[in-house]
Structures are given as C-alpha cells and as structure tokens.
Length: 324
Image (tube, rainbow, N blue to C red; front, side, top):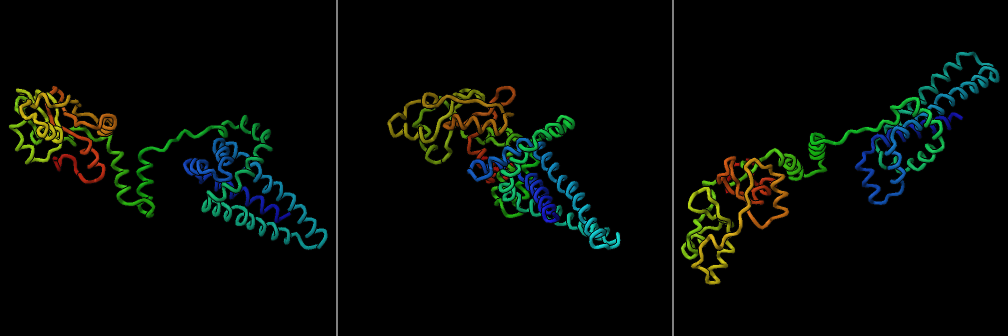
C-alpha cells in the first residue's frame, strides 16, 4: 500500500510539472512531426484547467485517502499486533510524511520539469483516459469553481521574444548574427524611409531632356544601379532608369533618345513610411527603386530594397551614417 501511494503521488506530481513546463510551441512541433503521444498532449493542453483539476483529484486521492488508509493499517499493526507504544506510530507517520514529500513530490516534479517533453509524451495518453473517467467529478468542480475553465489569453509579445533570443544566444543555441538579425526585425516598424534612404543631394540624377549618348561616359564611369530622371525642376521627377537598361539601349543604337523616353514610371513613397511596410512593397514590386517625397510632395531621396536588407543584415549599423 505504501509503495502504491508513493508511486501514485509521484506520477501525479511529475505529470503536472511536465505538462505545465511544456510550451505550446513544443507541442505544435511534436504534433507536426507525428511523435507518438503528441496528439494526446495537445488535447490536454487545450483544456489545461480540466487537466490540472483531474491531476489534483487523483493526487489527493493518493495523498489524502491513501494516507488515511495507510495510517489506520499502520495503527493496527503497530499498536494492536506488535503492541508497541503510540510513540512508534508518531515516528512512522513522521517518516512516511517526509518520504511522501521527497519521493512523491520534490523528486518527481524536478524530474518532470527537467525532462518535460519526454515525460509529457509518456503520461499524456494515460492522463487523457483518467481525465475522461473523472469527467463527471471534474465537470462538477468546473461549475463550482469557474476559474478552472478560464483559459489564458496571454500571447507572446515582442519583449518576450527579444528576451528568449538573448537567453538562447547566451546559452549558445542561437548564433550571434541570428540574434542580432532577430532584434533588427523588430526594429523595422520603428524605422522610416527617411532614415534609410539616399538623400536627394547624394542621389544619382539625370536630366530627362538629355540624350542618352551625352551621358554615356557618366554611365560607364559610375556604377549606380538606378538613376532618377528629372524634369526642368528638381522636384519634378519624370521617372527612374536602371544603368543596365540604359547601357543596353546604347548598344541597340538608341543614343539619340531622350532619357525621359527611356525612363520607367516612378513609384513614390512618403518619407514617413515604415521600413517593414516598404519591404513588403518591394516584395510585390521588386524591380524598381522608390522615390521618397516629403510632406509637401518634394523630392527627398531615393531608396531601394537593398537599403533595408543591408541594414537588416547588419552591414549598416547606423541609419543615415552610410549613404549609398
């Protein structure tokens, strides 16, 4: 009886610790890989309040009812059969209580928390069946104590992911460059195009009225991938042209064409657009740069997807510090 009581208490304590320390992400990954016991664990996690109620009921059956039965049996053996003083019964009760605390509570919970995934997969099918057997009693407890059915609405936020990334890096599970990039991803919505763009004074520009042949030497000398084609005024942007397309036009003998004719339609973005929105825009239209305009619609600068990606990769540690 004592062994059964200790094993039952240890099973409940270890199971509770293992299930409570298994994260939803771990459960989803186990189900995705089709690990045996993962589906049962997922069902238990979906109704965590009911699962814990069933575990508590079973554990108290072992600890309370089992202890009463064992105490009565020990009293009959020690006092009536062996005719020993009542002090020996007190000694037995004290020793067995310490044994329950250590063997039935502390050690199983420590092992359950240490090997949470392995233990959870083993005990989940058993607990699922026991929960179904105790469903009438648990249902009554849920009605008496509504907090049992209350589900946690907490969702992992940005601060927690940053902390997990830092801890993973400190433990050597995440590389330094990976941790840095994850941190920069969360900074994308704090950056604006005005912080990453090439300002107008540094942007490569060409007059739209100029002939292609007249700028041949400039195109060969400089390796800027994109050029902004301007009208008569500096804020009058006619379009954009890639260096590759302009050089191809020269080879095709179109040197007498004006740059305005050879330019592509321009896509304007406000200087306050967030970097993450800009990156998503480049994902759908990746073949062009964007001309950044200020609040008055004036030409403020130019930005390409590479400006965002180079900062994200850590090649530009400080925005605006390294203009293209």
